[in-house]
Length: 120
Image (tube, rainbow, N blue to C red; front, side, top):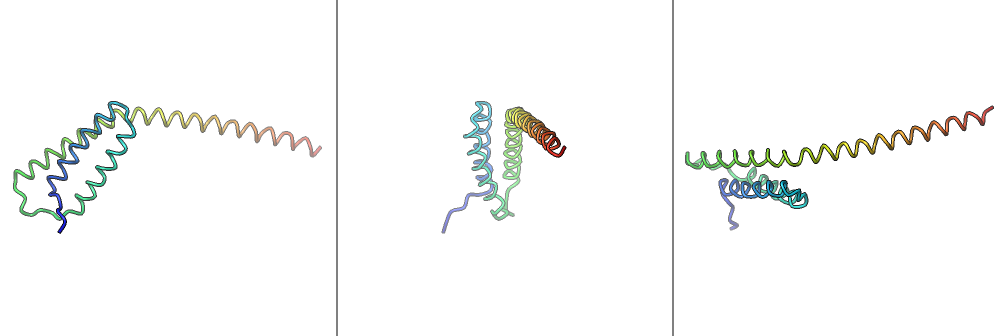
């Protein structure tokens, strides 16, 4: 029979990974950040699939609450580092799209004016 980690163990592993995500975000190590995010998603899926422990002690619940709070704090810290980068990327891609659209519009206008001259 395969060993299944407890919910608290899954939360603890997620907490360790979220801490590493903060370090990766601070270092702008996007590849590591993506890999860590993938690993946390796997743990989250395992957590969702794990049966609820109805015998959980109050101390376990307090521990889970503290771990979740820390994971959320780490997530906020990661976002503080990634959101400005994502905004710059959006602006860069948006500027490129506007530039390409204006070039296409100018090209279409040139084609329209040259084809208009052919009909006369």
